[in-house]
Length: 150
Image 1 (tube, rainbow, N blue to C red):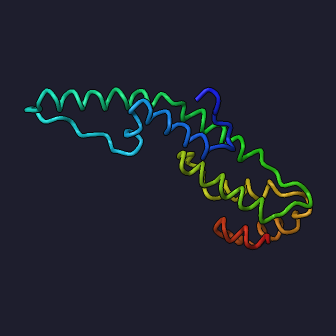
Image 2 (cartoon, rainbow, N blue to C red):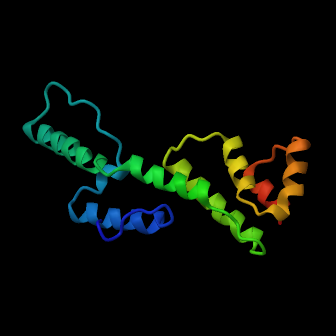
Image 3 (cartoon, rainbow, N blue to C red):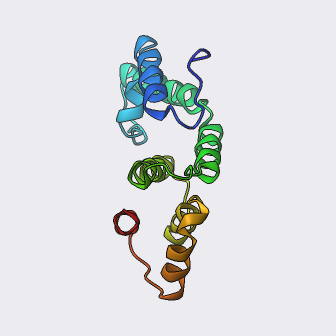
């Protein structure tokens, strides 16, 4: 994990690497299976051992710095700017990808915030579009906003 640290743009590769490491350590199951409910009073020693192991593995996996990952992804999203003359479609796809990653990480940003950041990421050539969008209260979903830009 030290050689493939999350940097805000490599989420897919980082997650794949995390899963490989956790599977190697026989702990990957805690990402996919829900937390078991409390054990019944008449649990067998084997059931107690399995439950305790799940709790310990879950504690270890939770030690992965989710807050750091969310911070890096948020930082990337807020700092991404479209270069003048580059493809607005490519930029829009990139921004939508970052929004999806932030939602996966439970960043809990409002839809209006996502829209504002996407509009602020555009170069000055899009200022008339931004004024029109805001003045007319268009309030479109993000994918429709990107389609309007293209």
